[in-house]
Image (cartoon, rainbow, N blue to C red):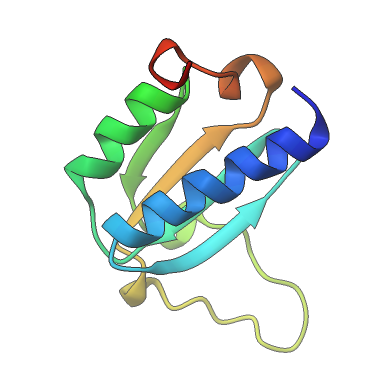
Length: 101
């Protein structure tokens, strides 16, 4: 999967999570993980991720689950983040599934 296709896939995943998670409150992109925080848990997101990616993790939000911010505004408001969705970034994990072909 090329970098462009990988980016498109992450945008597609973000849109679905945003629509079904009552908005995105937190987003963090690392070399090996893509993390999205939503206001609520959604079974529709679970079903979508199960069909779209090979592995992912989900958990209720807490300060321990989030990266600390750098700079002037270091506060993270976890009240607005109800659930964290972590997707490992790799071509193998984000490759097309049979349902998309």
